[in-house]
Length: 109
Image 1: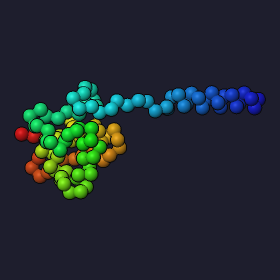
Image 2: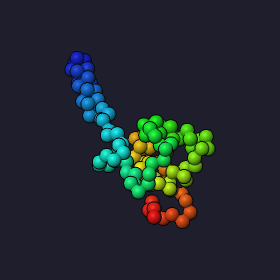
Image 3: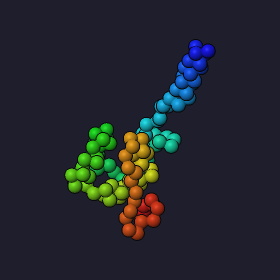
Image 4: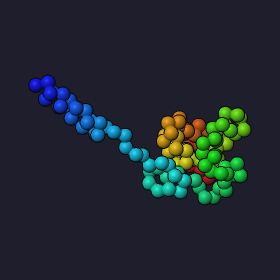
């Protein structure tokens, strides 16, 4: 009876492990496709300090924390729902909200 109970417990553990095992999540990609695509409007030229993009993606918050940039400066070109929050959600960072006065939603001229 003990062997049967232990065997059932092991099988249950394996089934639960397989059912709840973390699945691969697509990484956000600039100019990608699907829900995780990061869209940046083509009418804006990327500033020189955005190069190389790989460095910028991991260090932009350092510049904001040092005071080199304000978060509001980013919002002139970036729409949080299309070009910020996919990555922020992916890495567990706080989402960006456009709190500027006089801006309704995330529409830009």
